[in-house]
Image (tube, rainbow, N blue to C red; front, side, top):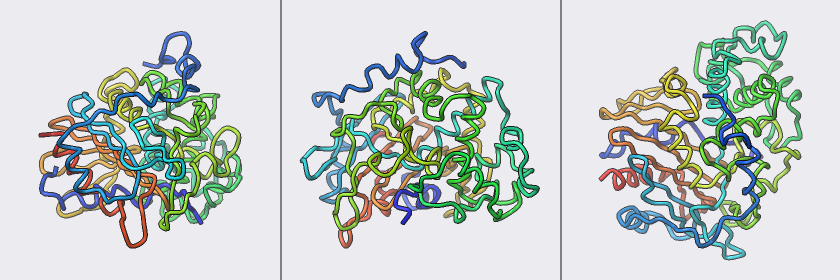
Amino acid sequence: MRANRCSRGVGTVAIAVAAMGTISACGDGRGRGGVDAALQHADRPAAATVHERTDPSVQSFLETTLPQGPGGTVVAARDGRLLHCRGFGMADQEKKIPARCDTAYDIMSMTKQFTAAAIMKLEMMGKLRVTDPISTFLGPVPADKQGITLHHLLAHTAGLNDDESGDDYDPVSRDGMLDVALKSRLQSAPGAAFHYSNLGYSVLAAIIEKVSGVGYERFLARHLFAPSGMARTGYVLPRWDRDQVAVEYDEHGRPQGRPHEHPWAADGPYWFLRGNGGLLSTPRDMFRWHRALEGNKVLSGRAKRKMFKPHVSVGVRHGHKVHYGYGWVVIRAGGRHIVEHDGGNDWSFGEFARFTDPRVMVFWITNHAYRQGKWNLHEQNTELTFGIEERARD
């Protein structure tokens, strides 16, 4: 079972967007200390007394919309200001640990935006160009793969077939994953069609390592997380306090453990998951990432324009065109610009959406998305996301 396969589809909000009437440079970051300075306090558990910011309108909406039972956290921000960051339910039902703003969750396919941002950062550093063919970094590739560029991998148009890869927890190395990707049969010629591919983002993670000379997580920590103030995001570099990380629960309410307690390598998940999913982060850190994307400290304006550009059509939903950028779904609906990405597995689900005019950010995540015969928070994504956005906007 691919229990942690990181997306149940591309942009749940995007697909149902019209259903709601409200439609809505290159340094190491923190000075000379770099990533190590950024992480020197990461082994300290988040204080239980940290204020849980509450917006009354958002909270009232959640109390009448969320079912009783699941745990999770909701974040809402407007114009760079945090309005709401508060948990609901339990992060660990057995130990009665409540979900909080600083609970760490598996962010699943939302990991892809960090992989895409790392490629943008390497382009800013002059180390690569998104138009480069993958053979520039991987050496000789089969004839049918010679036309694949970094752009194709970023926009899911390389034609790679995820069905020919293995389970997220298969103990496959970086080279083993690359061997599978290069030997797989393409679904379509490079650039010809959109095929959502977790495997493609694992290939990008391998290229990040080959170009930078450091591990994938360490590159992200040094160049993305540290300058954004995100000390509680990563695979294994943060020294996680076990009780800070949410337990995941299946549709029968049975605990499935914490994300990093499943079979992983010493430096993070194996390579059918690395780069496309599996990062742990706190909702407060995801707000910090949103703030970083609003400025130019981490990524230049040019890099962000590339990342949020509607590169390939995903389809038309209810009269609205839905596209994929680099690690983000891009929507124009009702005169508004929205970039978003969800993430889901057999147990958890989350959504990260950023709206313009006004600038509103919504992030919500749950460690118990499905309960047989009782709730399915995946199916409530549109209702929850746009309901939170409307209250943050108004």
